[in-house]
Image (cartoon, rainbow, N blue to C red; front, top):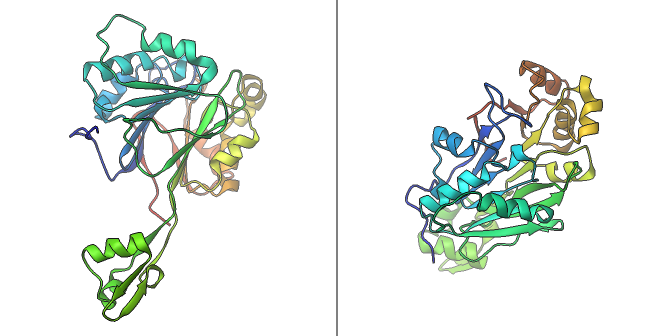
Length: 318
Protein backbone atom coordinates (compact mmCIF):
# COMPACT_ATOMS: atom_id res chain seq x y z
CA UNK A 1 0.00 0.00 0.00
CA UNK A 2 1.44 3.37 -1.01
CA UNK A 3 1.90 6.10 1.57
CA UNK A 4 1.04 9.67 0.67
CA UNK A 5 4.13 11.80 -0.06
CA UNK A 6 5.18 14.03 2.83
CA UNK A 7 4.65 17.23 0.80
CA UNK A 8 1.16 16.22 -0.26
CA UNK A 9 -1.43 18.86 0.65
CA UNK A 10 -4.55 17.76 2.50
CA UNK A 11 -7.79 19.36 3.71
CA UNK A 12 -7.70 21.97 0.97
CA UNK A 13 -10.13 22.54 -1.86
CA UNK A 14 -9.04 24.99 -4.48
CA UNK A 15 -8.26 25.33 -8.15
CA UNK A 16 -4.90 26.58 -9.43
CA UNK A 17 -4.88 27.89 -13.01
CA UNK A 18 -1.49 27.06 -14.52
CA UNK A 19 -2.39 28.54 -17.91
CA UNK A 20 -5.42 30.22 -19.42
CA UNK A 21 -4.76 30.67 -23.17
CA UNK A 22 -6.46 28.84 -26.00
CA UNK A 23 -4.67 27.40 -29.05
CA UNK A 24 -1.44 29.38 -28.62
CA UNK A 25 0.21 30.91 -25.55
CA UNK A 26 0.64 34.68 -25.35
CA UNK A 27 3.07 36.94 -23.51
CA UNK A 28 0.76 36.90 -20.49
CA UNK A 29 -1.05 33.56 -20.78
CA UNK A 30 0.47 30.09 -20.83
CA UNK A 31 -1.16 27.14 -22.55
CA UNK A 32 -3.93 25.46 -20.55
CA UNK A 33 -3.31 23.64 -17.30
CA UNK A 34 -5.39 23.40 -14.11
CA UNK A 35 -4.76 21.67 -10.80
CA UNK A 36 -7.64 20.85 -8.48
CA UNK A 37 -6.83 20.27 -4.81
CA UNK A 38 -9.69 18.31 -3.27
CA UNK A 39 -8.75 16.96 0.14
CA UNK A 40 -6.52 13.95 -0.60
CA UNK A 41 -6.85 14.24 -4.37
CA UNK A 42 -4.73 16.47 -6.61
CA UNK A 43 -5.94 16.29 -10.20
CA UNK A 44 -4.07 17.88 -13.09
CA UNK A 45 -6.48 18.76 -15.89
CA UNK A 46 -5.39 19.39 -19.49
CA UNK A 47 -1.62 19.92 -19.16
CA UNK A 48 -0.74 22.14 -22.10
CA UNK A 49 2.79 23.08 -23.10
CA UNK A 50 4.75 24.60 -20.21
CA UNK A 51 2.65 23.01 -17.44
CA UNK A 52 5.67 21.57 -15.64
CA UNK A 53 7.23 25.05 -15.32
CA UNK A 54 3.93 26.61 -14.27
CA UNK A 55 3.63 23.97 -11.55
CA UNK A 56 7.01 25.12 -10.28
CA UNK A 57 5.82 28.73 -10.14
CA UNK A 58 2.66 27.63 -8.33
CA UNK A 59 4.57 25.54 -5.80
CA UNK A 60 2.96 22.27 -6.90
CA UNK A 61 5.10 19.15 -6.80
CA UNK A 62 4.69 16.34 -9.30
CA UNK A 63 4.77 14.04 -6.28
CA UNK A 64 1.43 15.46 -5.16
CA UNK A 65 -0.48 14.44 -8.30
CA UNK A 66 -3.03 11.67 -7.88
CA UNK A 67 -4.55 11.82 -11.37
CA UNK A 68 -4.17 13.48 -14.78
CA UNK A 69 -7.42 14.08 -16.67
CA UNK A 70 -7.37 15.20 -20.30
CA UNK A 71 -10.47 16.43 -22.11
CA UNK A 72 -9.18 15.99 -25.67
CA UNK A 73 -6.00 15.69 -27.69
CA UNK A 74 -5.49 19.16 -29.11
CA UNK A 75 -2.01 20.40 -28.29
CA UNK A 76 -3.01 23.26 -26.02
CA UNK A 77 -4.60 20.69 -23.71
CA UNK A 78 -2.01 17.93 -23.86
CA UNK A 79 1.49 18.87 -25.10
CA UNK A 80 2.69 19.38 -21.53
CA UNK A 81 1.94 15.78 -20.63
CA UNK A 82 5.37 14.66 -21.84
CA UNK A 83 7.23 16.90 -19.41
CA UNK A 84 4.93 16.16 -16.49
CA UNK A 85 5.24 12.39 -16.97
CA UNK A 86 9.02 12.60 -17.18
CA UNK A 87 9.02 14.66 -13.97
CA UNK A 88 6.85 12.04 -12.27
CA UNK A 89 9.46 9.48 -13.32
CA UNK A 90 12.43 11.64 -12.27
CA UNK A 91 10.91 12.21 -8.82
CA UNK A 92 10.12 8.49 -8.46
CA UNK A 93 6.54 9.28 -7.47
CA UNK A 94 5.45 6.16 -5.56
CA UNK A 95 1.69 6.17 -6.23
CA UNK A 96 0.02 5.06 -9.42
CA UNK A 97 -1.15 8.10 -11.38
CA UNK A 98 -4.06 7.35 -13.71
CA UNK A 99 -4.14 9.31 -16.97
CA UNK A 100 -7.71 9.68 -18.25
CA UNK A 101 -8.35 10.68 -21.88
CA UNK A 102 -10.67 10.01 -24.86
CA UNK A 103 -9.96 6.50 -26.11
CA UNK A 104 -9.59 7.70 -29.69
CA UNK A 105 -6.50 9.67 -28.63
CA UNK A 106 -4.54 6.72 -27.21
CA UNK A 107 -1.81 6.82 -29.88
CA UNK A 108 -1.04 10.45 -29.04
CA UNK A 109 -1.12 9.80 -25.29
CA UNK A 110 1.30 6.89 -25.68
CA UNK A 111 3.56 9.03 -27.88
CA UNK A 112 3.59 11.86 -25.31
CA UNK A 113 4.36 9.47 -22.47
CA UNK A 114 7.36 8.13 -24.41
CA UNK A 115 8.29 11.26 -26.36
CA UNK A 116 12.03 11.24 -25.59
CA UNK A 117 14.68 9.06 -23.99
CA UNK A 118 14.48 8.84 -20.20
CA UNK A 119 14.69 6.22 -17.47
CA UNK A 120 11.13 5.03 -16.94
CA UNK A 121 10.20 4.60 -13.31
CA UNK A 122 6.79 6.30 -13.44
CA UNK A 123 3.68 4.39 -12.37
CA UNK A 124 0.94 5.34 -14.82
CA UNK A 125 -2.42 3.76 -15.62
CA UNK A 126 -3.70 4.86 -19.02
CA UNK A 127 -7.51 5.02 -19.02
CA UNK A 128 -9.12 5.60 -22.39
CA UNK A 129 -12.72 6.80 -22.15
CA UNK A 130 -15.25 5.41 -24.61
CA UNK A 131 -18.54 6.17 -22.83
CA UNK A 132 -20.09 8.51 -20.29
CA UNK A 133 -20.03 7.53 -16.64
CA UNK A 134 -17.92 7.18 -13.52
CA UNK A 135 -14.17 6.95 -14.11
CA UNK A 136 -12.92 3.64 -12.63
CA UNK A 137 -10.42 3.66 -9.81
CA UNK A 138 -7.19 1.70 -10.28
CA UNK A 139 -5.01 -0.28 -7.85
CA UNK A 140 -2.41 1.94 -6.19
CA UNK A 141 -4.32 5.17 -6.91
CA UNK A 142 -4.59 7.67 -4.07
CA UNK A 143 -8.13 8.99 -3.80
CA UNK A 144 -10.89 10.08 -1.48
CA UNK A 145 -14.62 9.29 -1.43
CA UNK A 146 -15.60 11.72 -4.21
CA UNK A 147 -16.66 10.27 -7.58
CA UNK A 148 -15.16 11.52 -10.84
CA UNK A 149 -17.45 11.28 -13.87
CA UNK A 150 -16.82 11.99 -17.53
CA UNK A 151 -19.29 12.92 -20.26
CA UNK A 152 -18.93 13.46 -24.01
CA UNK A 153 -18.88 17.07 -25.27
CA UNK A 154 -19.38 18.48 -28.78
CA UNK A 155 -16.05 19.58 -30.24
CA UNK A 156 -14.20 19.08 -33.52
CA UNK A 157 -12.77 15.79 -32.21
CA UNK A 158 -13.68 13.47 -29.35
CA UNK A 159 -13.76 15.43 -26.10
CA UNK A 160 -14.99 14.78 -22.56
CA UNK A 161 -15.89 17.03 -19.67
CA UNK A 162 -15.46 16.02 -16.04
CA UNK A 163 -17.45 16.36 -12.84
CA UNK A 164 -16.35 15.51 -9.28
CA UNK A 165 -19.07 14.85 -6.70
CA UNK A 166 -18.65 14.38 -2.98
CA UNK A 167 -21.28 12.13 -1.36
CA UNK A 168 -23.75 13.73 1.00
CA UNK A 169 -22.95 13.33 4.68
CA UNK A 170 -23.92 14.64 8.09
CA UNK A 171 -22.44 17.26 10.38
CA UNK A 172 -22.26 16.40 14.06
CA UNK A 173 -23.64 19.04 16.46
CA UNK A 174 -21.24 19.37 19.44
CA UNK A 175 -23.95 20.82 21.66
CA UNK A 176 -26.38 17.98 21.05
CA UNK A 177 -23.60 15.40 21.38
CA UNK A 178 -22.64 16.82 24.76
CA UNK A 179 -26.28 16.87 25.91
CA UNK A 180 -26.58 13.20 24.96
CA UNK A 181 -23.34 12.37 26.81
CA UNK A 182 -21.56 11.14 23.67
CA UNK A 183 -17.86 11.81 23.16
CA UNK A 184 -14.61 10.23 21.97
CA UNK A 185 -14.81 6.99 19.97
CA UNK A 186 -18.57 6.80 20.52
CA UNK A 187 -19.02 9.71 18.07
CA UNK A 188 -17.46 7.68 15.26
CA UNK A 189 -19.41 4.59 16.25
CA UNK A 190 -22.68 6.51 16.08
CA UNK A 191 -21.73 7.95 12.68
CA UNK A 192 -20.97 4.48 11.30
CA UNK A 193 -23.87 2.53 12.82
CA UNK A 194 -26.62 5.14 12.92
CA UNK A 195 -27.67 4.42 16.50
CA UNK A 196 -25.90 4.16 19.84
CA UNK A 197 -27.11 2.74 23.14
CA UNK A 198 -26.14 4.88 26.13
CA UNK A 199 -27.04 4.77 29.80
CA UNK A 200 -29.70 7.35 29.02
CA UNK A 201 -31.23 5.31 26.20
CA UNK A 202 -30.77 4.90 22.45
CA UNK A 203 -29.46 7.92 20.49
CA UNK A 204 -30.05 8.13 16.75
CA UNK A 205 -27.66 9.84 14.37
CA UNK A 206 -30.46 12.20 13.32
CA UNK A 207 -30.78 13.35 16.94
CA UNK A 208 -27.30 14.84 17.12
CA UNK A 209 -26.47 15.80 13.55
CA UNK A 210 -27.83 17.55 10.49
CA UNK A 211 -27.49 16.88 6.75
CA UNK A 212 -24.31 18.07 5.03
CA UNK A 213 -24.74 18.25 1.25
CA UNK A 214 -21.73 17.06 -0.69
CA UNK A 215 -19.74 19.57 -2.72
CA UNK A 216 -19.14 19.34 -6.46
CA UNK A 217 -16.83 20.59 -9.20
CA UNK A 218 -17.11 20.60 -12.99
CA UNK A 219 -14.52 21.07 -15.73
CA UNK A 220 -15.84 21.94 -19.19
CA UNK A 221 -13.38 22.68 -21.97
CA UNK A 222 -13.62 22.88 -25.74
CA UNK A 223 -17.22 22.36 -26.79
CA UNK A 224 -20.20 23.86 -28.52
CA UNK A 225 -23.32 24.28 -26.41
CA UNK A 226 -24.84 20.84 -25.84
CA UNK A 227 -26.85 18.92 -23.24
CA UNK A 228 -23.66 17.69 -21.56
CA UNK A 229 -22.56 21.23 -20.70
CA UNK A 230 -25.80 21.72 -18.75
CA UNK A 231 -25.66 18.36 -16.98
CA UNK A 232 -22.03 18.77 -15.92
CA UNK A 233 -22.65 22.26 -14.55
CA UNK A 234 -25.94 21.53 -12.80
CA UNK A 235 -25.77 22.83 -9.24
CA UNK A 236 -21.98 22.63 -8.85
CA UNK A 237 -20.09 24.67 -6.29
CA UNK A 238 -17.24 25.48 -8.70
CA UNK A 239 -17.43 25.47 -12.49
CA UNK A 240 -14.33 25.90 -14.67
CA UNK A 241 -15.49 26.48 -18.22
CA UNK A 242 -14.03 27.65 -21.49
CA UNK A 243 -15.08 31.04 -22.83
CA UNK A 244 -12.85 31.24 -25.86
CA UNK A 245 -14.86 33.94 -27.62
CA UNK A 246 -16.97 36.97 -26.84
CA UNK A 247 -20.58 37.06 -27.97
CA UNK A 248 -19.84 39.33 -30.92
CA UNK A 249 -17.88 36.39 -32.38
CA UNK A 250 -20.47 33.72 -31.54
CA UNK A 251 -20.52 32.45 -35.14
CA UNK A 252 -16.79 31.76 -34.94
CA UNK A 253 -17.33 30.01 -31.62
CA UNK A 254 -19.95 27.71 -33.09
CA UNK A 255 -17.91 26.99 -36.22
CA UNK A 256 -14.83 26.03 -34.22
CA UNK A 257 -16.61 24.12 -31.46
CA UNK A 258 -16.35 26.63 -28.61
CA UNK A 259 -18.39 28.68 -26.17
CA UNK A 260 -18.65 32.42 -25.65
CA UNK A 261 -18.39 34.14 -22.28
CA UNK A 262 -22.10 34.93 -22.48
CA UNK A 263 -22.99 31.29 -23.12
CA UNK A 264 -20.76 30.05 -20.29
CA UNK A 265 -22.19 32.57 -17.83
CA UNK A 266 -25.75 31.77 -18.90
CA UNK A 267 -25.12 28.11 -18.12
CA UNK A 268 -23.74 29.06 -14.71
CA UNK A 269 -26.70 31.29 -13.92
CA UNK A 270 -29.38 28.81 -14.97
CA UNK A 271 -27.64 25.85 -13.31
CA UNK A 272 -27.21 27.58 -9.96
CA UNK A 273 -23.40 27.51 -10.04
CA UNK A 274 -21.95 29.17 -6.94
CA UNK A 275 -18.52 30.09 -8.31
CA UNK A 276 -17.71 30.49 -12.00
CA UNK A 277 -14.22 30.45 -13.51
CA UNK A 278 -13.94 31.60 -17.12
CA UNK A 279 -10.78 30.60 -18.99
CA UNK A 280 -9.29 29.42 -22.32
CA UNK A 281 -9.27 32.86 -23.94
CA UNK A 282 -8.54 33.48 -27.61
CA UNK A 283 -5.41 35.50 -28.37
CA UNK A 284 -7.59 37.91 -30.39
CA UNK A 285 -8.74 39.57 -27.15
CA UNK A 286 -6.46 41.71 -25.00
CA UNK A 287 -8.89 43.14 -22.43
CA UNK A 288 -10.08 40.61 -19.85
CA UNK A 289 -12.62 43.16 -18.59
CA UNK A 290 -14.72 42.44 -21.68
CA UNK A 291 -15.25 38.87 -20.51
CA UNK A 292 -16.23 40.01 -17.04
CA UNK A 293 -18.69 42.57 -18.41
CA UNK A 294 -20.30 40.00 -20.68
CA UNK A 295 -20.58 37.40 -17.93
CA UNK A 296 -21.96 39.89 -15.43
CA UNK A 297 -24.82 40.71 -17.76
CA UNK A 298 -26.40 37.35 -16.82
CA UNK A 299 -24.53 35.94 -13.79
CA UNK A 300 -24.32 37.45 -10.29
CA UNK A 301 -22.46 34.75 -8.36
CA UNK A 302 -18.76 34.53 -7.56
CA UNK A 303 -16.86 35.17 -10.81
CA UNK A 304 -13.21 34.75 -11.76
CA UNK A 305 -11.90 35.71 -15.17
CA UNK A 306 -8.86 33.52 -14.77
CA UNK A 307 -5.28 34.71 -15.09
CA UNK A 308 -2.25 32.45 -14.95
CA UNK A 309 -1.44 31.20 -11.43
CA UNK A 310 -4.76 32.36 -9.99
CA UNK A 311 -5.94 30.29 -7.02
CA UNK A 312 -9.71 29.96 -6.69
CA UNK A 313 -11.13 28.33 -3.54
CA UNK A 314 -14.11 26.04 -3.63
CA UNK A 315 -16.90 28.02 -1.91
CA UNK A 316 -17.62 27.24 1.73
CA UNK A 317 -20.29 24.66 2.29
CA UNK A 318 -23.86 25.84 2.02
